Image (tube, rainbow over all chains, first blue to last red; front, side, top):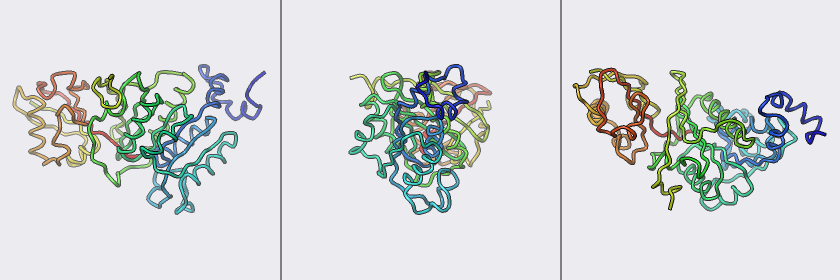
Length: 246
Length: 92
């Protein structure tokens, strides 16, 4: 007898038909918890696909409210949502999409102080940030608590993705050793985070189910202008201040 | 010799918004010489001036291979080489 309900069997029918996926993978997703660290351009898309795929629990964290200038890319939100907390609208929309999963909405900025608590009980973290500083806080905590962290980022019509599995490959600090200049209003066209957010969701599903080869130790560089996808090998830095061997 | 530059993200902007450009360099030039030439041409901002330093956040690839696994900024270039400059990206 199936451990999935008739409704689940129908809802997830098309993915259950993937030979390497099947019911076992679906049950793994069902028992998983994913932290979506920011529900902006990247996080909107990643959250939608993870909710649709049936990840049992999504913990969505974002301190901000919906603004008009978000709407070219943050497709969880509509014009009528302007002024509302993103996590509130996001959880409502995600529950409408898939009422079988649990959404935990936390309206906070991710800091050194709360990151440990936010990571508690999650299987992995999906990057939905728009700055380096918070990404480095998440990276450090993920290394400390051995949680996979799927780094995704965009600029203009470019994208980047690298999956970080502490101990198995380079961390974000191995990739970006310095402190890059933060840009407050980053130029971006919506389909760029759409693309990267969808790939982050795919990497998350792969890690949660054990399917395929995650992008560990390789940085995917997406050039939308040339429509080229290239992977660059990234090695672990033995002297990395975050994940280097002591 | 002619070198093709492929610039990404903030460097694409710094190079006048062009993803590709061609630079003429004397025979025997290295990455170091290329960086000097780019800095002269485009008056790069402070963050971009650390190009090629060991702690730089900007990845430099010659024909798809990162220079840290070649000979760093001393890596010699030849006619037709494609050099990619890939800065870190933080948007979301």
